[in-house]
Image (cartoon, rainbow, N blue to C red; front, side, top):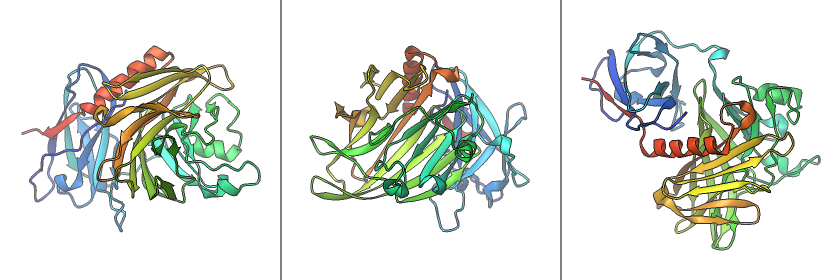
Length: 375
């Protein structure tokens, strides 16, 4: 399963880029699949990250992606990522070298997303496991089905292919043609992991996003940002930016929410309420999970939020959502993970399996893969 990894922290002291051996260690006694390893370009000392290649200990070349995390003026990548599976307490070594500029093929892509102007300003994204969309400004005034909401919607899929473009193209994504479909009514709820600010009595939420930016777009990671218009909470004017990433092999998105003007406020992270859903809250490990029936097809799905347990104030709810309340820190940014599974995808098919996945994800968030230079 996909968990979470640290960036390389040890400076590689090279003036010219030479082969470097990296050691990566899983310190947990659990299997961890599709782990994303991050290497900082400043550590590698290479002029162009597009020329970085990575091989495993057998000499097999791995898929590599460059990522722009700071969205500078040149849109220049500043980290390199690749993935590997790890057994319990397993260490692996990788060789990083410089070579030809990497060119991708469509079949390489396991993560992808884009702004969908033709569908009233959706932003949609996916990996080889799950897909989502959220709503932009044009949807507010659409005569057909207007919606004012910053919810996180779910598109259930049971194929590893990238399907967003095809589903929008045929405009029939509410019908399952064998690869999945949209069977989730997010509406004005928080959907699957949307946020708001808690005023002590109710959740105040932004409306539809006004601007989107894609920082990196596959083949391993989709990373993008959404800006929201001002809204008022407890007499304060708040502006909000969501940064969201989704890596190949993961059932969970990583969210960073940056609030301006939100000092001394509390965020609420939400999962839409559903009749008959089964909820479990694990405060010690920092997760809220639910197992529920799908709306139309008779299948079932799991939804969940994972957050640093030290940041959680308490569990709460409103009419539409189950919530985790999290104190907004002084820097104004909270981060957490949220996502889902669909039993008809055939990989996570029970409430017990879903809660196990989420608990291991929480352990992985607290104990990232350790990455260092092998001397």
